[in-house]
Length: 205
Image: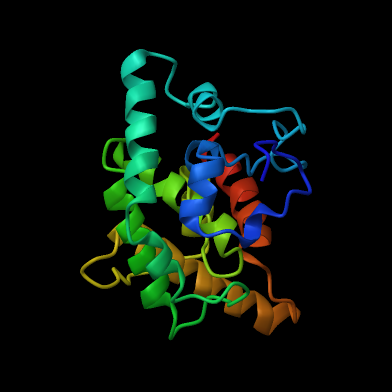
């Protein structure tokens, strides 16, 4: 790596520590709502910490920048890679693997405790989805509202899980199966997110 970030840099193969040592921007900036992923990755040289600070969703104060840098360092030194290694790169979420998925999410949520509850819940899901796009469902308030339209999901997950995300992930898995049964198509978590976001925005508007 020469410090340059580009669309075709192949970063998806790196471990969490390698990701964060090169582009800690990914902790904060996962632009899932745009058609072109990572529009800031233009090929121009970027200092990773400056890139992270430039994409903070909560402002530009010295305290917020300090929190972002501290969080990046903490995750680099964590056992998140070991948790992610329990889920294969292209493994799909299944009833027998969902416990591990929500446990990994719960672990990252605890590492992000400097951020607000809903913000870190969503941020953790998006970051993990980028690493394991077939296993982790994308959480935010719109997707959650869209899922409610299909009925409640009561599972709260294991003790180390974030209960709200565990319930959301279980509901997404169930909806995935229902769509597959009725339509013959298994939506990916990203496709399911598009469906739920659309319905959730309408419900909350």
